[in-house]
Each structure stands twice: as structure tokens, then as C-alpha cells.
Length: 61
Figure (cartoon, one colour):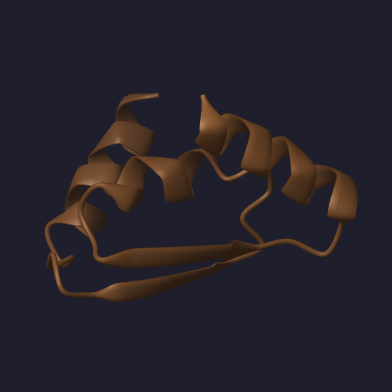
């Protein structure tokens, strides 16, 4: 888990508030949701509609 946190912080260091991000293969969107507060807009996609629905439910919470 420490390596995941490190990668999150490393990636976040490149993000700017005016950026728009496209996350392809986002699964249920957990990482996309973590980055959402760092950018102007984030779009997360996945091949499976069921997984996208899970991500949308997470985003509402």
C-alpha cells in the first residue's frame, strides 16, 4: 500500500487545478476520485457498464 500512496503523490505532483484528466480503464474509479479534487475535470472510463455504475455510485457518496 505504501507504493500505491507514493505513486498517487508522485502523479498528483504533476496535476494542476486547470487540468482536465482522462482515466482509461478506471475500474470503479477509486483513483480517479482521489485525483478529482486536484484538477478542473476528470473523466473516467471502463469497458464494462456495471463497473462504471459502481464508480458513479462512489462519486455520489
